[in-house]
Image (cartoon, rainbow, N blue to C red; front, side, top):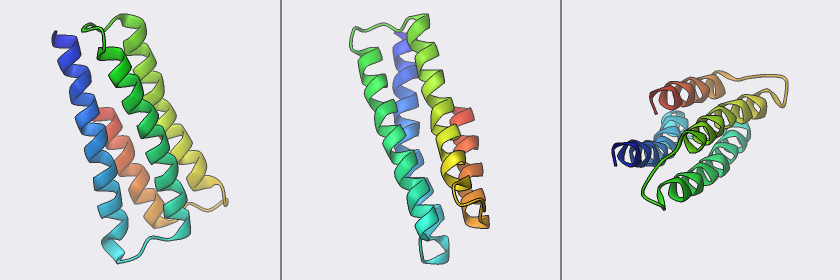
Length: 109
């Protein structure tokens, strides 16, 4: 059950992450189109991550391949966000702040 609890904690942190990123993006009272694009990408990947977590814990246990799959999805969230930020060949300060928060949170998951 310990593994299941750890995985469910990941879900709680992932849910909080999106809220925190939106709050961070709103610090300057506006969200640029680039920030929106990155936030939408992160949100889409977090939704997939949440689905994977629910599937992982559905049988009451977590095996090694499931843990590895979740780690791969965590990496994908960060990789896709970086790619989205670089899409216009310019990572703004605001995007960099969001990326830093994303990476720090994913590393703590």
